[in-house]
Image 1 (cartoon, rainbow, N blue to C red):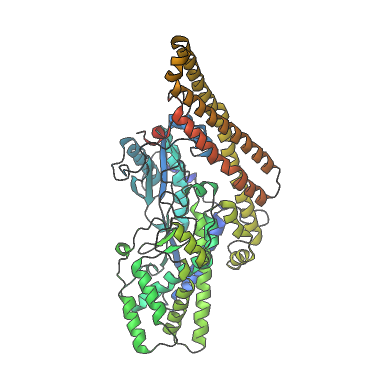
Image 2 (image 1 turned 180 degrees about the horizontal axis):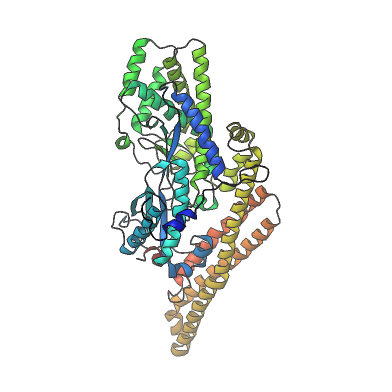
Amino acid sequence: MGPEQPGLHHRTHALHPTIFISYTGEALDYKMPLLRAIKAVDEAATAVCQYFDKEVTKVTCTLGWEQEYFLIDEALYYARPDIMMAGRALFGHTPAKGQQLEDHYFGSIPERAQAFMRDFETESLKLGIPVKTRHNEVAPNQFECAPVFEELNLAVDHNMLLMDVMEKTARKHDFRVLLHEKPYAGVNGSGKHNNWSLATSTGKNLLRPAKTPKENMLFLAFFVNTIKAIHSHADVLRASIASANNDHRLGANEAPPAIISVFIGEYLTNLLDGLEKNIKGAMSPASKTELKLDIGRIPPVMLDNTDRNRTSPFAFTGNKFEFRAVGSSANCAASMTVLNTIVANQLREFKKTVDALIKKGTKKDEAILRVIRDLIVESKAIRFEGNGYGDEWRKEAARRGLSNITDTPRALEVWSRKETKKLFADMGVLSEVELDARHEIELHSYVLKIQIESRVCGDLAVNHIIPAAINYQNRLIENVRGLRDVLGADKAKKASATQVILIEEISEHIGKVSTLTNAMIEARKKANTIEDHRDKAMAYCDKVKPYLEQIRYHADKLELLVDDELWPLPKMRELLFTR
């Protein structure tokens, strides 16, 4: 080992990779289930690889995450109790300029932001985190970084470390990092795209289309089985990215919708459709050769042939699948545990079915292709290439039998299903007790987050917004009185018409803010009396949360009416456009 950098010895030795288990052996963290899921997919994938290459002894999961985040000036952060407490702006009228010009996205990185980036990248590299990219994101003051692809378990650790390093480094630059999935309404939220693939011990990426028919059969086996896994367990995958924060992001401003679907691009769609039509019953050697040649014509690089469809939650992007619905503040381990578990389970089923056909006398290649064809047919409903935002897709998804679960408490219901518990128990990833505990904890977390938002909302409404509005209204009233004293009643009536209208409008919105805030507090009190975790979360979702947007509407109207000098909160134009 070479000479140590100052401070490096202490820092590297203070970090100990750890797993947490209970006295009775249950996993208490994200790490243990992730390691179990990685082991499950390794065993199942290696077994399938044996059909094609006997030298494969291990399959490793790889992950490349993309971390999106917002920067906010520290002084403005402290002036916004909602951002401090809840991580997002509960109030704030949309500014005249937002992201519509895309001048931030395509512009150069602001100098102050770049200085912060260089600093946290240096700190990250000291910890062995291979940060590779930095760039502006679509919304003003939004940015992204990403590392070199790594083994999945290590990549998860590095992402958790990176978020901590970013927050600490930001303070040195008088910034705060906002990792909330939707800190500002009306502009893009922040995701953490999880780019996932599988690599063999012989150095092959199992999701990279190849040049030879044999290698492309290997690619198709893993490609189609992954799609089938998503189709069979879409609700479990949806639950893995469910949170109070992510509910605000999904389905808005380029974020994927809550409906889980798979995007594979036009070329691969046509290929799978062709396979579906061509493989019928037993295949002659000639047709098999022809089919293999067709498969062999898949271009070695698919990236140029797959549209970057931002509305797809789960997209194939050339040599990997990109799970785009993961939220920016999430631990990658949650979604990656689920993805690896369902893929491992599907690969097991695939091998059982192929082995059964071979046992009955079907040749190996034909058995594999026949099962692939069946899986293409069975999973066709999950494949979607169009606009994920339109009403047409919601209707079409319902026709296809796909779930559209728009809130967290209902998304988490899948954890209590018998088939979900059996799946995770059979794969040795999570026991029934471990699943039940996670379900309860996630419901509790949801309740606490909405409760905090509701309390902050009420505080700001009653103690900041209403007083500021009344203050300005009093000024207007004094102005009207003054005009009457100077001009007399008749002339003052005409001269003060605008002021009177403003006084009336302000009164109306103050009344609404007050009434809705009181109703929200009552709804919260009622929800707090509920003991059952599920019912309590549902009450917070259905009875408390809607008031947040209703109060915001009237508060934002007041923001446009009240003198800017008197408005108590930094406005969206200030939060988004600090440099």
